[in-house]
Structures are given as structure tokens and as C-alpha cells.
Length: 343
Image (tube, rainbow, N blue to C red):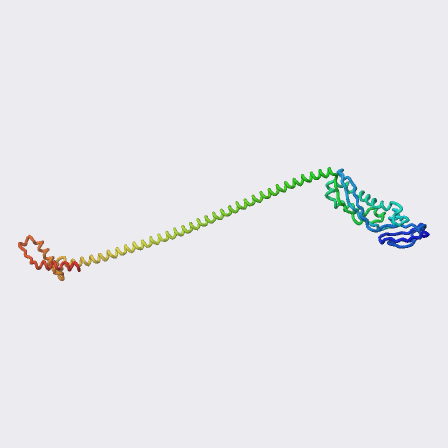
């Protein structure tokens, strides 16, 4: 009514009221009445904005690469932004009178593309694909320090690169190359594993041979020790035998000396006995044999005496004419013989 209207802004909307060429009211989330014929309203959103992007660039080795990502930013200086871009509201307070608000995301994307192109021209395709994180960090750092971003009065909150892809033909070539590399690495791994197995087997065989050598060496030492022990025992036995022989020799020498001494003693005894007999015989040597025979018969058995008498008769048989012997005498002699034999 009569051009009087009411403005109610959201808390994340920065509103500036221009009247007669100057700002009469500015702030976030304002609510006020204004006179529309002489008032212009500028509304700058302060909320963060997520803007996706996708573009193609060329790497240092002239390979095309597609970069897909997202950037998040927010307005921190709405006055600067309002001076560069037209954020004036239309009469309905719902839309803008120009397309400038829609140009802000594209300007940010253009700046990202410029920085990304500068970084990609330093890298080959393989390096770009391998070093995506470092590439994003460099672009974000350049975006934060960009003069355009500072002039727009915005703050970059985050920069994410979701995908970096070469063209399909290059991707297939890289896949084939990588596949061949993986196959070579697999072959090398198999060769390394087999070589390691061979080395392990060789080490096991060497250990077994070393063990056998050590065992044989120990056996040889044992045999040598046994031989040495047997030799020492044999030497001891020979020494003992020699000592026994020496002892036997000494004993035999002593026996021989004893025998000699015994023989000498017996010879002396015999000499003494012979001397005694000679001395005794000297007494009987000059005596009459008949006297000696008579003396010998003293105490002799009568049968022996009779036998001696018969012997004398037999010796002097040529001198005897007739000899009569009584049967009783012979019977007595025969009876006496068995009793003496038994005795």
C-alpha cells in the first residue's frame, strides 16, 4: 500500500538497504519496513556453497585427463562481493534483477581450472594419476592465496578431486601396461619364491651335510679315542707282562740259586754221609765176613735166618752129599710167609 513493504531476511542472508545512493541499513537476518520506490535491497547469501566441477586438461606429456571434483566456499566479505557482482533483489524480494549471482560459482571453477592446468603441465599423466593428493593440495593452496578469491570476498572451505581419468584409449593402454607390469612382478615374485625355496633347500642340504660331517668327525674322534685307549691298555698289559716276566725271571733265578744251594747242601750232606759211611765201613772193612754176617743176623726173623741158611747150603751144594729136611720145617716156613705178606 502506497509502496510500503516489509523485508524479512533469513539468518544466513546479509541484507543491505540502499536509499538515495547510500547504505542506510546492513546486517544479517534483518527485518524492517521500507519504501519501495526509493529503496534498493541487496541480499548476499552467507551460507557455504558446494559447487561440483568437471573439466579436461592436458598433462606435460600431452595426454588428455579429465578432472572431476567439488569445491566448498562461503562469503566472508559481502560488501566486496556486492561491489563486484549485482546481488540486487527484484521487486518480489525472491529473485535477483541480474544473472551475476549465478556467475560466482563459475568464476571459482574457472580459477580452479587455471590453477589445475598450471599444476598438470608440470606432471606427466602417470605422475598426475599417482600424485593426485599432492596435486589437490597444491591447487587448494593456490586457490586460498588467489587474488581473485580475495577480491570476491569469499573463503574456500574445501577442495576435493573425486576422479582423475585419462581418455578411454589411454586408459586401456595404461591398463595393459600396468597389467603387463603386474604380470612381470608376479613372475618375479614366483621366481623369487622359487629361488628362495631353492636357497632354503640348498641351506638345508648344506646343514644336513655339515651335520653328517660333524657326526663322522665325532665318530672318527671316538674311534681314535678307543684306539688310543686300547693302545694304552695294550701298553699297560705289555708292561705288566714284562714286569711279570721280569718277576718270573727273578723268581727262577732265585729258584735256581735255591736249587744250587740245595744241591750244594745235599752234596755236602752226601759228602758228610759218605764220609760217615766210609768211616763206619773202615771199621768193618778188615773184619771177617762171617762175623759181619752173624752180626747182621742178630735180631733177624727166624724164617729169614732159615732162608739164609738154605742159601748157604745152595752155595755149597757141591760139597754136600745128602741133605734131609723135615717136612714140619717147610710147613712152618710156608705158614709164616702169608702172614708176613699181609703185614
